[in-house]
Image 1 (cartoon, helix red, strand yellow):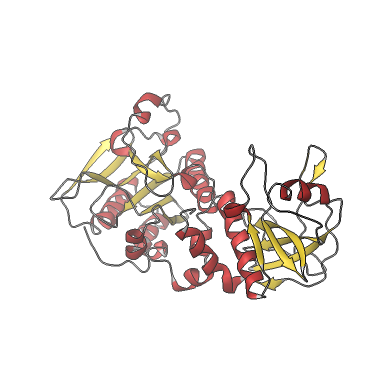
Image 2: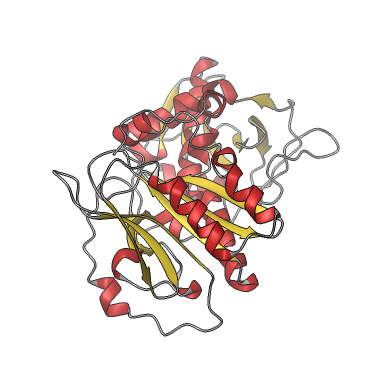
Length: 371
């Protein structure tokens, strides 16, 4: 196993350049498979074996010293039909949970003919279930390979002497060439040390944002607004996740702050995964979110806020409510006044950058164990 730091693991297209040339030259499936196996074998210092399992070919690293048996890669063409999934076998596969939630997953997707045994690996749940932006891309690649019956491959890259892969590469091969992408599968310090994000992505925080679920992105957005307000000298009275306890699952207030000596409720709406993320209105503002209305009470309205504050604080009166929109794709935030009925009004200020506090916000969330 190589222990060198891989600083270009996300630039996978260059690594597969020779395979791409063969594909464009209309090489045979055997030639393409051989080129892939040579590439993957060059990444390992262990004892390797190649075998067929179902309709796919696997590259496997045999146990040596403190390194266990582990799958390195697989390649195959999805068959037209597949057998029913054996749920009992998959459910019995050992699964150690540490840090972010993980699933028992197929390296070659079940819909593409993937079986069990060496085809099962520990995968980040957000990626496996398509809950993050990376996860959406990952599942889209699998789906297209199955629909088109295109040659599909997947490779696992390790950061230490375990069978928990730090990076997963997946791709398809057609006469138009190779389409491949790498995904982070582990988020611990060891994995980040071996496979660090590029300097550009790390500075902007996007290397992490691509891997987060909608709920985690919401946490980042709230932290961005908290840091932003503190930078402006706004006193923070309470933060939803740490001070305002959830009551029977109902949604709590995000922030309570003092603005011009008035107690003000701040609702935060974070946009990243949505189709309109990163776009502005013709007036140059961030697009307004829809505030929910449950039980006849609109989120952000005076009744909504008072109901959630009375059990926490001795409130004589509330100042104006604000909704902050954080667009993490655009790197912008903007606040909108909210009237007593919970409707957003015209923003008094243009959007401002939040890029400078994004990395700090992500680090706060990571330290708290919420990433």
